[in-house]
Length: 468
Image (tube, rainbow, N blue to C red; front, side, top):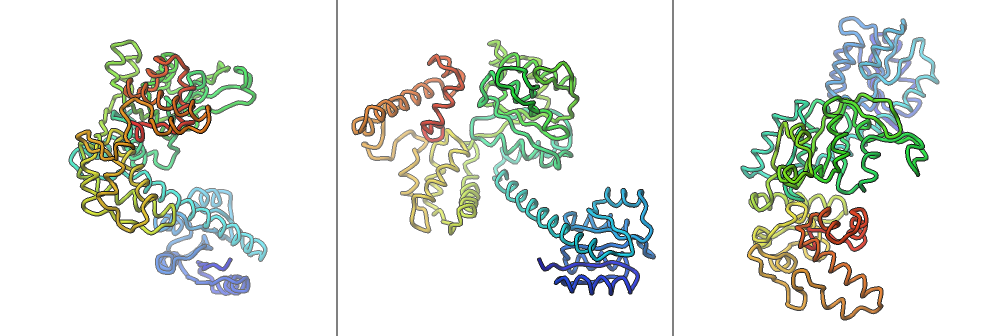
């Protein structure tokens, strides 16, 4: 792969030798005779790789390396020295050099360093692009006063290690707020580990959070590192924390109090340094009053409580959200972006958003997929969303009474199995509506394990956003 390589060395003979060697290998070569000149060349020429001598008058190589990291921390650097010592090599590594080679330079060492450096640079650029795309995907979009207030709280809370409890309805953006806290914290370069406490069966959640040793229980054929250990030095996000069992709550409280975990099947404690962010759509004070949530854990989690405002309280953010989701969908599917007309945006503002921002995103994607036009009109929106006043804009044949089985698919079912599946789906949706889409409560009412209900939701593609 042809690359632009910068050689920084105060010896003319070394610069000439390196130029000849690297140009013969097919690369473009630029040179600098001092550390300061090298920094200027990095800013101006944007090289793919740098060879940097240690001993130079004025600014030496290690100082230049330190300053270079502030210009481009992804740029691969090879440190070159005629008087290499272990201390110098260690310091170079600490400052970000990936290779240390000694003079006189070996052709094979130089070519090997170029190959390794270019591969490393490519990986770093790819990683940076992925991080950028991930940050865009998890960006908090909006400018209304309620959201501004929350993001101001995020900016104040992020640099601390305080636990944060994010409250809000399903789909209101609690995960995005959690990621914003991590992204703006001192732990931003460490891992962000997310755990959906409601989606993991009760018999497995302790193993997921705290890990287990081989043979700790039936089926534990290998040792497993828990999520808290994985998040060491970083952040763990406990989503739907209100769905934890009492036993798991006690163990999470211990992590918060003592900073240590204990794998299932082990008597050894492991110290962890983890920042905890939790979220729930439940009223935890009510859960405490009814004996389902520990009050001491609540106080530990809610050092900084934040409230994610529902979409109905930030309707003026809908145009910005629609533009963001439309651009994201177009990028990910290599499609030309569509435009939403003023009438379409007004129709979206008038809709009822029980699923909040998540439901809005699903609707935007549905409209983009199903429309063949470059402009989404108000009629397109009214065909798929229900206004806030409760009227159903769809034709009578397409609308079903709340909680009832959709008559069309049932009457036209071609097989007994299709009839059973259609009926079961409608019945589950009705029960979920009756219990305000509380998964745990619904599972209890219909007398089935919560894990089984989750399997049914996935099987029939049931969600509050589409069936609420």
